Image 1 (spheres, chains in turn orange, brown):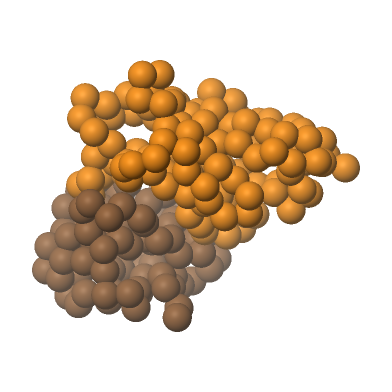
Image 2 (cartoon, rainbow over the protein chains, first blue to last red):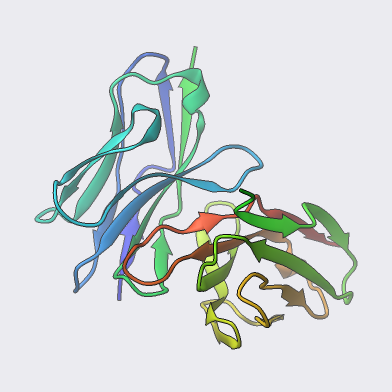
Length: 112
Length: 113
């Protein structure tokens, strides 16, 4: 069985500071990994995904994530956040079937 | 390009009433899904479909039914609404296994009173 753990339910950070949102997964097979962002009262939008190849993945809005197979992690980073990055972020994993497992989300609050 | 469209956006139901949440996608995706999102709980899969005429249960199917008569449409029916069904519901679609990306609708906020 697969699982996803987002260790931080809330992350406050000041504007222009760097941020890292943590995601760990468990799986007995190869996986695809995703980060989605959800703005208030909206659906989830894809930020970035790892399918194969380079372990450093760049996404939209200046976000990037690094796949670390030995540590079973897929942490999301941004070097300098903006107020507009305030949202909830979800990590997700799939082994390539219909089944996607989502983490419980991390609420990023960017402070002025 | 509309993507995944859900209606209604907001609805209040009384206990015991029934309703249908509509979902349509225009990306010719084979796979479609219904999730519910409760605070602090992430997304839970209710039902999914791998193509027209084929549906199957997810993690939390009790109290819901679906149908998939066309590739585009995947309505979710709530029978005999209960307060435990108060949630945000998301319809989603994907091309199929392997490529990976799921595309979500805007969500439907349902309150059962």
